[in-house]
Length: 388
Image 1 (tube, one colour):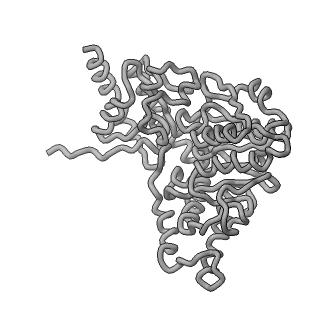
Image 2 (tube, one colour):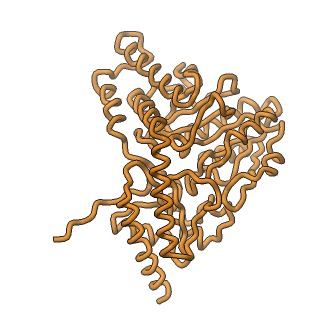
């Protein structure tokens, strides 16, 4: 009997498995260390000490002060908080606009839309055909009436890397606060708040081996801020609610591992990504790799094949034990082309053929070989059916 091959997971940009080290670090806080960090008895003091330690550990990973780290539930909450809370704090001072890009995560774009709904101004920067911010557009839109500019560090669909330190410095010269969604960047690119002048930065735990439901927002000292969630005095009044201590400890552990392994992980992942890209292009010469001309993070390969559609391709891949996606997991089920690829000027038919393959530490060279064998066969089958 022929044994079934093990499944291949190539959707690490959507989520990653919880690492064993992270799970073990969290375990005591589901059991004997169950106290509320706000309680004054011994159980609470033990929990508070663990919370403070986790905050210090994550701050070290970011090059930040502990009081600049605010824990939250996810990247979406961090993005909403950064854009809305800073704009609301600044609007009465004459800074009534927010600036972002058309290729942001929907969490940033929706927050910018809400600013417009509440009477502010939403400005969208131009990007080139690879998705890189156009300098002239930045200079045109980022003026002294802007409260916050938000630009994603690594795009979740294409992997394109923006020059965040340079953009943040240019915003700073105009007195404009700068936020970056670093959900896909943390653990891939070097991040250091001591030398890079961003003011707010969002991360999410489940992209780096921590559980879903935990994230953090860096808020530089002195940055204007109004809380999004109000109630108790937790987190210095920046986010009310009892802290999710087990997950906070898990995030700190995952962050330390991601930082320690970053350079080696980059090399290994880039090698797999580039090898798979080369093999697929050799087998399918008319395939299009999106943002190929820009500097990309190593874990994302977004490829379209003319004459196919991603829904059929993804289902066919899944039937063969290969898990990929059509782009952002937050857009799953959408019948419209990716807003990211549309902003790059990709034709709708080609955008609807896009398959995103995203790598993580669990992937191997054997995965690359199998996908390189299976994918072209599925393309040939799809094209023959379309031609019939």
